[in-house]
Every structure is written in C-alpha cells, then in structure tokens.
Amino acid sequence: MATRRTRARIEVSEDRGVFMISIAAELADMHPQTLRMYEARGLIAPRRSPKGTRLYSQADVERLRRIQEMTAELGFNLAGVERVLELEEEARRLRERILATERRLLAERAEMAAELERVRALASQEIQRARAARGEIVPYQRGGEIVRISGPKRRG
Amino acid sequence: MATRRTRARIEVSEDRGVFMISIAAELADMHPQTLRMYEARGLIAPRRSPKGTRLYSQADVERLRRIQEMTAELGFNLAGVERVLELEEEARRLRERILATERRLLAERAEMAAELERVRALASQEIQRARAARGEIVPYQRGGEIVRISGPKRRG
DNA sequence: TTGCTCCTCACGTCACGTGAGGTGGC
DNA sequence: TTGCTCCTCACGTCACGTGAGGTGGC
Image (cartoon, rainbow over all chains, first blue to last red):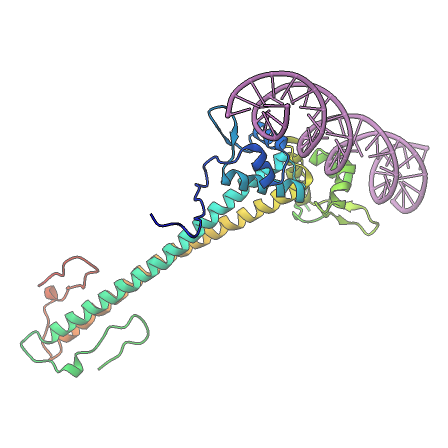
C-alpha cells in the first residue's frame, strides 16, 4: 500500500456512544455531575459500556448543547426544557407534513395537466378520423384544429 | 314591555376588560400579586380603567389559567411558559396551514375533474359536427361516442 | 370606615447546579 | 499512584410566589 499523505477524518455514526462523561461534559460546556443529573431526570439517555461507563454519542452531545442553551441562556427550568423539546419536534413534523402536502399538490397539478393534454390530443385525433371517415382526404392545414381548455372556442 | 320569565346570559366580547384583579385572580386560582408580577414580566397585558385599575378580559383569564396549569401542574418556570406559549401558537398556525393546503388539494382535484369533463364534452361535440359536416344526418346511437381519459381507446 | 385598588420591598421555598466524599477498575 | 469512573449527600444560589406595609379613590 502507498503511504497516506492526508489523514482521513474518522467517520462515526451520529448515534454511536463514543464520548466518556468528562469529554461529553466539556463538549457541552457542562459539569459532569449535571449530565448525571439530567440522565436521572430522563432528559438524556447515553449508552453504557459493558463496565457501566456512560458513553455519549454525537447526537447526545448535540442534545446536551440544546439543553445548555435553554437553561443557561434562555433560563428555562428542566420541566420547560422537556416540553420545549417535544414541541419543537412536533413543529418539525408539522413542517415536514406541509412540505409533503405542497409537493403532492404540485405533482397532482402536473399530472392533471398531462392528462388534459392527452385527452385533447385524443380528441383531436378523433375529430380528424371523423372528418376522414368516408375516405375523404382532409387537407393538412385544416386538420390542426385543437380543442381548447377554456376561452371562446375557435371556429375554422 | 312584557315581564321576562327567563334571564338572558350577558354576552361579553372575549377581549373586553371586565374583571378587576381580585376577580380575575380568583377565576384563575392565583394570588392577585402574582397577576401583577406576570404583567411586570410581560406575560399578560390587561387593559386599564381610566383610573388605572387593571381590567382582565375572558381571554386574559383563559391565558392566566393556561399559565397556572403550566407553572403549578407542569412545573415550568416563567421563561419556559413564554416559550411554550409561543411554540403552541406556532403549532396551531402550522396545523391551520396544513388544513388550508389539503383543502386546496381537494378543490383543485374537483376543478380539474370538471375541466376534463368539459374538454371531453367539447370533443364529443366536435366529432358530431365533423360527421354531420356535409349535411348528413348522424344516427343518434352512433353519436354517443366519448373520448376516454385512459385505458384502451374504444373503436366503433 | 370598610374593602378594594395601586405600588415596592422582603422573605420563604423550591429547583438546580455543583462540590465533596467514598468506591472501584484500567 | 494518578486520573478517571461510579454513586449519594449536602449546600449555595436564584426564581418565584406571597405577605406586609403604605397610599388613594369609590
């Protein structure tokens, strides 16, 4: 194998427990004891090593930072933090649902427009066929008539 | 005027200031001083009489009850209460928007179905006209041909 | 005068964060 | 041994609720 010139950044799953409590506390700018307290209150649930040591994931640290922001900067108590986290999650889901519904609206519009186009084309064909019904040859310039969606109907 | 047998319930606008602080406090199950404190913190804004007496509306009392629930039962502090009230309002607006978008989806579907029907009817008419073009009489039973939305096209 | 209003100040309580103290395994 | 982990207990601080105290107008 060739010698590596650049170091690859280690890829770690967001949910994998990788930080022991002292590291997680430092990353979240909290006291380690505070993390234990939050766990006792059910605000955070780090994994444990086989020996019982807490292992915090990237996502855990992210959550801790959000909690830190709410308690230290915004002044919420822990009961409020729990509810706010729930409500923000709910708002996120609602926004997703709005996006999905709006996308569906656009998709159905396109679908219906295509359907209308198809129906118009078919109608045009049928009219051609009806005109040519008795073996007559229909001149090309008279055959381009199209049925319009709306507005006054055109007469040839 | 005839004597009234039944008393009409007095109709009061939701936003009209009608309760003095002692009444509002009793209705919200709070200490009057607590209401003054909440006002100082910007959590509630009762109107004032010309003399300066606070006048709480039905909506104010409703809001106070919600706050009372959040502080006394759920244990939020006031910073949390403020944020939760905001987020609940946001969730309410998002849900409204979902309903509006879904209603619009249904309306557009109906509109497009009607449009398709109109185009099909027009096409049918054109075909009739084409067949009758040279003064021929088109028998009624052959004239009912319709352009189909989808599926294999029918041949007469 | 009584009972309300207005206001400010102060105290008690409780939640929360953190420090201490003692244990155990790399 | 050092420095981490685990745990429980206890204390300091701060927010919040409420009581007290003094004022003023129906």
